[in-house]
Image (cartoon, rainbow, N blue to C red; front, side):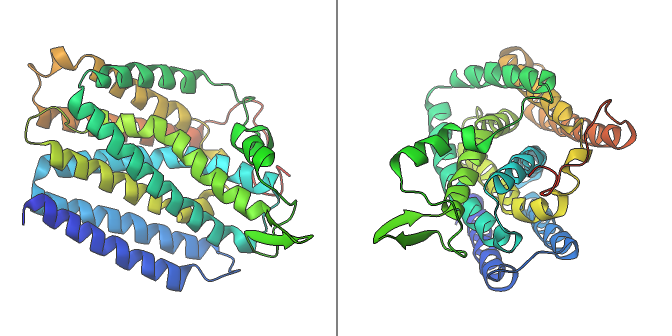
Length: 331
């Protein structure tokens, strides 16, 4: 077996064992997740992701390991924006807290499947048409600029979203959760509950965020060096999946404090612009700076921007900032 195949095997084994433990021990039906449980689960998923980083360093070397860590941090930081939107979705459809765990789990599993498909298509296109990376670069610069200058008033309304209006138009929906069911029979006809709607919206929202994050990861990982393509694909897959798997525990941990990170969005925006410009200038950068050094620089920029924006958010309060966002305050 090749090193990449061994890494895939270890990753698949860890993933299967973790999901069995999560389903059997951490996701009991109608169970409310406490802050302590969420903290323990977050430590578990982050520790697992970092342990895999160490394994990759030993098995595959320094470069893919650092690419994996950079990509994982990028995805993990973007998860905070996911959490803010998730809170709005749960509140808009009045989801009971006892259903949060199962709904998030199913939504995230669907998101992983869609992401794998999305990544596969994107990687194949990039391998055949390298110029697509320049399109990704322009897209990231534009997205980063829009994110940096976005107004606080631009709030996502789940009930006005295209995906909800599409479901409402083509599916029989009922305005309740069916006591924890996703599909019920009313008046002799099948209908879908608000929990079903929320699951679909969670997966759809994650895909929208993937439009930013996956091109960003492709800008971090070396997709140009001949012979490195299988390792690059492995880095992209594993970093994405580990980041998404930790999203549920992060939701329970941060849902009451997500509004504290006022400037994290600006930090992420700077990273996206940096990666986009790096992709656009690759023709001039590659002959001067080797790939190994580029990985170190990318990791340094990501860590500096994310930690800097978090600390700045803690010590600097936005003027006219509303109360902390919680389930109760936005209903």
